[in-house]
Amino acid sequence: MTSTENIPISLLVHMVFCPRRAWLEAQGEQADSFAMTAGSVAHTRVDDPAESRPGTERAMLVHSDELGLTGRCDVVHSEPNGTLTIQEYKSTPVRRKPQIRESQRIQVLAEVMCLESMGYTVTGAEVHFINHHKSIPVPLSPAGREECLEWIRRTREMVRGSRAPEPLLDDPRCASCSHATICLPDEHHHTNGSPTRRISASDPEGEIVHVMTPGARAFMKERQVVIAKNGETLASCPIERISGMVVHGNVDLSSALVRELLWRRLSIVWCSGRGRVVGWATSARLPNGQARIHQQAMSEYGCLPLAQAMIKAKISNQATLLRRNGGGTSATTSQLRALGRQTTQVSSLPDLFALEGRAAQIYFTDFPSMLKGTEAEEFLEAWPGRHGRGATDPLNAALNFCYGLLLADCIRGLTACGLDPHGGFLHSPSRNKPALALDLMEEFRAPIADSVVITCINNRSLTPGMFSRTLGDTRLKAAGRNALTTAYEHKATTEIAHLIFGYTTSWRRAIEVQARILLGVIDGTRSEYKGMTIR
Image (cartoon, rainbow, N blue to C red; front, side, top):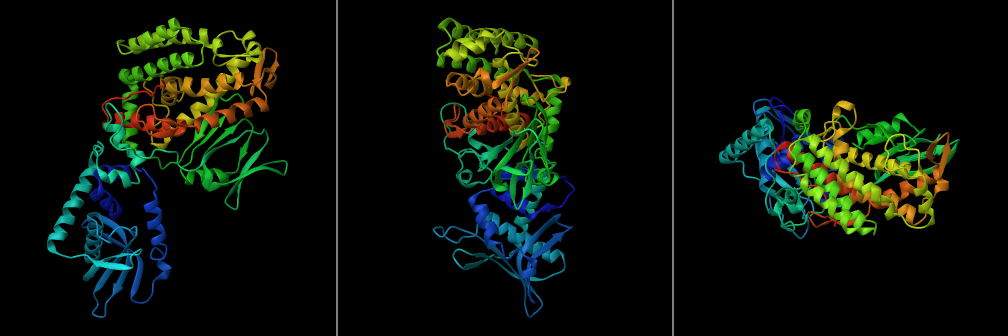
């Protein structure tokens, strides 16, 4: 939204409730809650213009160029004397009193003033609470109109601003706010100890669908996502249950399915058969456009404090994983802890990369000690040490595949809050890689991707027989890809106590939380970034 556009009356309502919530709405952030769903159900009839009758107009569009407002009245009644009265429908839990909130009062006054600007005379207004079957009048006083004008001025000033308002501190409004899991008020104000109030940060309902069968095709059919091959249906899932899609290898998606996913602001990530991310698609209606501009400006020169926090968390998690799985000696973990502490003392990104390289060498030298059993011995016989692209042994191929799955989740987390996966602060975007997504995944490599590979090998759900070897090349067979993907999804959806904020969340949601804290640093509402570390 630009400062010259008309302001939606709904944005004015958000501003009265909370300036930061209005900012999030203006930036394109969308959220849902039980209260919002109940409100939508309550408006089912009044939002349908076809339900209008002589003397009663439903869902009437109103505007005022003078005020710079646009909106819609639920119900407008024409009185015998030619004047109008308006009625706004609201849903309130039965246990609460049917009382008009400040935001509702300003909303009705704004609608009245728009109608007056359109040349009508309004003699009455009320809010009808459907759960109580009770209507309460709204006073139409000059003082109320002046107050509404002041809120319009504040809202327009907020829209023109270049920085997000500060999150509320220990405010009861946050407990019932639909945008709490986007705003993260406690997380932004958190310093030491647990947050003063625990905001629900669980995953939204839905699941990530992986389409992996070569030659398969996914398409829409009667609101179902159907995956089929050679005329045989392999799987189907209601579109409402899907929160994202990952396509592996030679798989086709119908244009109708792609359009529906993007319309719902759900991301699609395409990977090669080896797990390497080759591209993604997201909706054009991404939020936080101004923050992306700041991100690109910061990315041009890198950001040492952000990079330090990410690498410190990565090294700490490597040390903890070695300790947990009985592979790392006290000397090894002590070396890694010491390198992690040194990250805060370096003065340049090259020096930080040098520390990261030393830590990686120590970590992957001891990595084989975390693998157990006879199956693990077969993996380790071909292990030449850690290799990324061009890996020719089963263990590196498995790690690379899981890193691809993790990168897809990091891309999804970043695009959900409107950040550009390419504008990194640690990795350079000049190599045409999703640099910021690679930055974000650093602290999650050990606790998610490495942990999945170790678990699969140790419990023998991944075996050397699940790899094909041709001319020195090693690739996962379908059984191996399925085993790793299943284990990865189990890990990503496993609920944990958040290691910084204390509430219960999943690993996948934790990735998005970190992305939103990163957004807070970019938009200026958070002073520093803290990486997520396991204990």
